Length: 314
Ligand code: TUI
Image 1 (cartoon, rainbow, N blue to C red):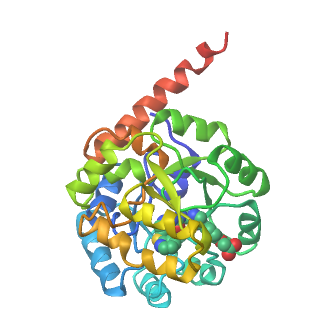
Image 2: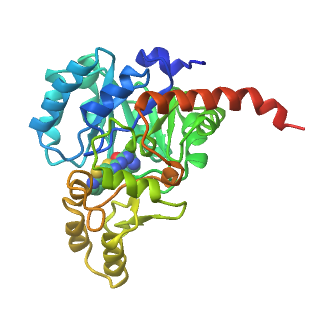
């Protein structure tokens, strides 16, 4: 099986990062992915600092391999989360939903590799000057908080704009997606939705079944008027969002509707009134599988795609 420069950069076997999804990517999932040769990432989201500390300790008990933490920059606990990551440094910090600029020097000083998620060329260019280790260029096929460019358009533009490694995310499910990402100039991929139905993922079975049942057009984008558009599976809550956006409800009121709704889905299992964030590839997720099997599936299919590519040109 092949390696890329991302494997050397992060000390992993396969060029696959598991997305650090809030309330979804817990210690169990992150450790299982890292143990299987990818990079497991804990999603700290808007969780309180004590939760992150517990997850860090649990992950360290489950694996000695490198793992990461995703920091959601809109978290109300951002300062405390950053303080924990300086006290107990991890191999990699990925960031999302904002500009991590001012936190970069301290994290790198602590020996942590910093990989911001970007959804535009402008932010990537601005952050290169802060000295980051790589970028994740995430297209709007992704679940959760998204920008407005597709992966196919965004990745090569970020690759051309910066001279550090770029990882592709959004709309990637298997070896076809991985090889396509490499063709766009990326050194690896980040996948979130693919890992939601990993056996080790602790979300309720009801949520996994909802993802498995989803078809190609079952995701929608909610909250555009609030400035924080989020891709999630259509349900009673997204229909309520649609009504409110159509009737011109003030963005603050719409924002309130989303408060706590991610936890409601991913921890309490409420798939009707919770926000079930998932990417467009949810339709390809067909069953629950151990993380190791998911990673080997991706790598095996990438190998066969690579060896057949030449034959597709007639
Ligand atoms: O962050 C994500 N996905 C997420 S975060 C999340 S939790 C949340 N809850 C409520 C509102 C918003 C989020 C669920 N899913 N992906 C990475 C990502 N980052 N996608 C887009 C961005 C992004 C957007 C704007 C990164 C930087 C940015 O910068 C703005 C600026 O300052 O230039």
